[in-house]
Length: 439
Image (cartoon, rainbow, N blue to C red; front, side, top):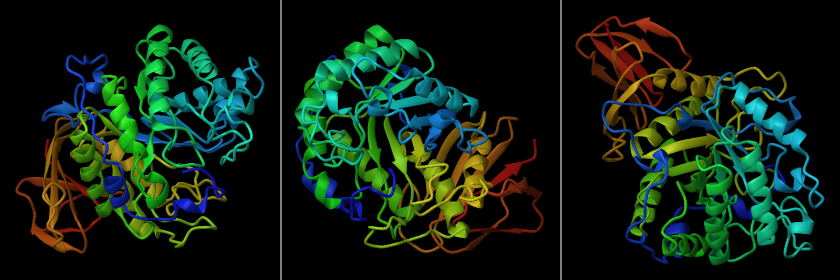
């Protein structure tokens, strides 16, 4: 979700619009082949390591080199980072590589092993309708001239081969302030982007244009038409993208429902490969929002942690928080004045640490079979990097007390602190905890 000038059309509404509007069906062509490892699996099978790329984020104005960076991140999405197409190539053929060099170097400094560049937002000279209104200026939401679109993609992929590891066809193309062309034409362009990457950087992943589920208006039938057109081409992408922003007054439990619904929706249309959530946050503090919701830090810590845990359990491979230094949606991860890491930012880092080098097993309970009962428990099982058995425990709401798991020796919380377990009972709340057994 970009800056505070974003249209009021985004004000929080329900996922039902996506399901009711995007009813065009499609199916994968027979004989479609898998070209990259990223398409092989969805949720890691039991006993498989957790991919660190799950833990994505954004850093606004990253290309300036002046912004606070997360101490570590598995993935960085270059959107609102200062390297949109119109910022890189304001004049035809005059590409400001210094901007991209800086942004890529900054992203690499976080340890990110996935760096994604997002196509779109064409400069006026490359827009079919350079006078049209868009969020980022005249022509920014116009369909691009295909030759120009493919040329800049090829040049970036060749220059940053092996460094930029994924490319997204467009950002939130179902929203008119970002894209005003047809789904069929963007699907064609997506297929041609695959051909360009096959030459410039065959290892790079191609991600479908993202759709946001928050708004009932601009969603309409666009995403259904886009998926159908991709299916007709045999799905020329490595992952499909959604933006699972809940309504401003909804939290992690609601988002988990969105994950289940969107994965099923895509599967019905023939896509059973990876699904990436390329933007997510909660609440809303933009000046045009229909409901202003700032999420308190004591709530935010659990929602941030669950965003990544739920995604892993429910089959979303990568999640890119919007954003590390964003202060216009509902959750801050750093202090806007000092850059100090807030509890919600620490939760992002802590869950990364829990999964670093860990081997995934599964989750059982409320997350996997929702009942809505207050205090219902979710239990996720894994093996930590030192070979120690562990469980992640949380409730959907409220507090519950369970017998201390037999043999459990230590409990770790989202502030990063761990302590020995004492007593016969363990309190579990909506804030996930990590329980370890003695090695």
